[in-house]
Image (cartoon, rainbow, N blue to C red; front, side):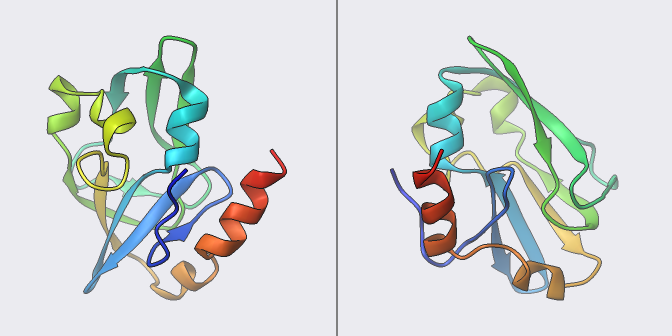
Length: 127
């Protein structure tokens, strides 16, 4: 299972990558492996506001539908349109091809409150 050290993680299994004044968000390798084969991804619209700990979209696998929870507050400035035609990217490449949204954070200090890779690994070990 891959947990890139440079990312931050939420308890709901989203990852956050800081890119200048924006953040890129997706779901973790652990999450996609638990869900199984992803067949559909629903994302918000550009311009939508996301609120920490509230759903911003969903992923549907052959097993279940799971909501995506915002790890921080912010405004969606980009979505990964490739996931509409290729939801399998979530299984194949959760940290590269399968990023979900790019957000302008309302408060960048919220990112510091997310887990480090080590903390996330510790949490998922107990799952």
